[in-house]
Length: 232
Picture 1 (cartoon, one colour):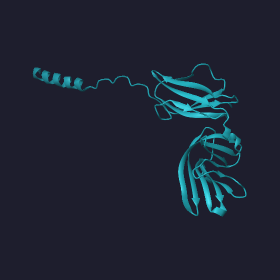
Picture 2 (spheres, helix red, strand yellow; picture 1 turned 90 degrees about the horizontal axis):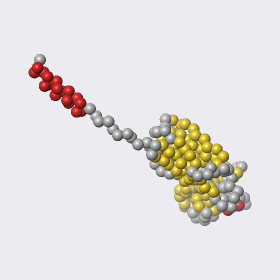
Picture 3 (cartoon, one colour; picture 1 turned 90 degrees about the vertical axis):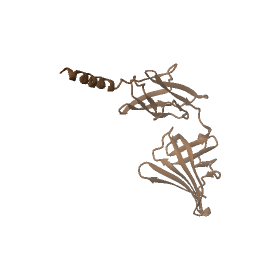
Picture 4 (cartoon, helix red, strand yellow; picture 1 turned 45 degrees about the horizontal axis):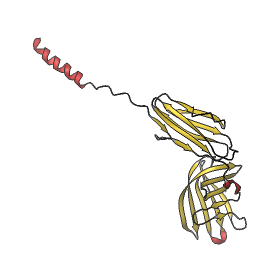
């Protein structure tokens, strides 16, 4: 019996030596829109609701930095799946002559993310009510009922395009990749295409933001020099 004791002690030692050492505590992971970054929204002066997604694998909370902004009407948190939430922030119209700013801080343990909102004053673009592509590649395309035919084509339940057709020139300008449910604050990668005599002359992807939706009119903006006014 004694001759088995050294062998048993050796096996017991191997068992305990092979046991995994406990990992140090894993830090909390917090992502905004699937990235470990802060967010910045620069909405137009119009009333609107801003949306973003939060992933956090620990307990978390949200607070507003400094004095509470009375132009933030509502904050809504909706659970999507495990550790993932959709957060909406509803803001009122900015009728002042200067932009206004607030910051929300989301925090968990030692990790935090900032969501900054800087709402601008009314954009001069809103004074433009003629349908068209302003400052677009190849030059302005401004709707004239004696020269153009305007149409809106819908694809399935989610996407659409608008077209400015010049029959006499055999030229069509197409704004594609648009959502059928355009909302203020929405960001899009719009496909801008100009076709002449059956040949594509211009094909570019243009990042735009929906800055106003009024009735059936929509204002899309890349920057102060390039913007689009359409009817859906």
